[in-house]
Image 1 (cartoon, rainbow over the protein chains, first blue to last red):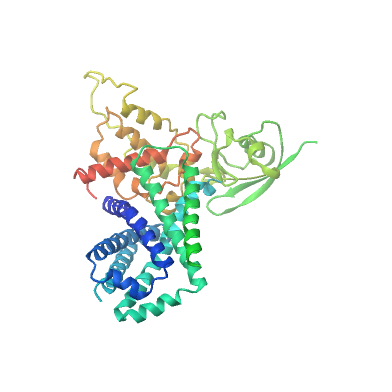
Image 2 (tube, helix red, strand yellow):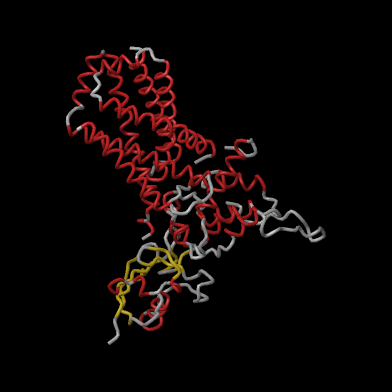
Length: 109
Length: 110
Length: 240
């Protein structure tokens, strides 16, 4: 792991600690009250707050997961470092794309 | 056997939970993205997840999320703060807390 | 009637197998005693290393029932449950023969981590006064008693998974030098431990800390290196 990857990995981890706690609270709230899709979407639709919160979460999680996956591949798979890095970047981009689409779906569609 | 020590297990669980969450995340995003096709589409998916088996799986995911977070905090504390004793006990406590959170999730949804 | 131990010893090099010997059990017997018995009374072709026999040199480290330990300081009574012992060479190092390993990679990584004192003064200058209770010296002293036995290196899974990783001992020595006011290694040493194989690969499994016969804490030393290198990186003193 390089200095740069390490710093990004730890920084996104620290950032996500409070984000995850809020997310667990959201999970509890949304699932217990038996919320319908309409209930959820009426709350998220057009909300700058939810867009910002989950947008940030998607970005941080994508970076963090990609670097984590890269570490696992370099240590546990026979892939060379460069291949592992490329795969990780691809995976990170996939998460960002799908995550952004999900945020869009909840806030703007 | 040093490989069975509580802290070695904590590191392994952190890694495995991370992998599981990484696999889950794209699916999670795809599910939420169903809202693009309209309320009804997302609604029918949400009702599909009402099944007890799915709820158990969700409880498992909540456990994985909680334990990955706590395992990550373990690393951040070791790397950024003064060395502390009692880490093995804290690691065991973290597993228990994660299980309790998952238990409460299941108790509320089942 | 003396009890007998069933002792499996690794015979061969990288390829080989465990062979079993029967060794009489004795009071206060150590694992080194057992290995020595086999070599002297059963099979003189057995290769193994030892020197002091009293737990100060670190030469006799081997894998005993899955754990790397000093065999002269491991009582058979404590580890041979049901009279069985499995003894192999230290892991993560090339096997020369039987129970002896090639320590060269271990010391090469020591060099790569710049675990070598870089002098800053000559004999013609004033001797620098180092207070033993200064914060930096305390940190260095807590990590300085490494005798290069290789137990931490053999125990470390990150060493096993990542052939570039310097390992706990090399990084701990680098840490002592980072805290040595007399040392002139400076940012070059931080750069050395911040690159491939450096401190950031450590996952804090703490097998090293758990097993170090000198009660050193490489996990803490490596955490210290992570802090120093991160600070240096953010200040632009070292590169990614």
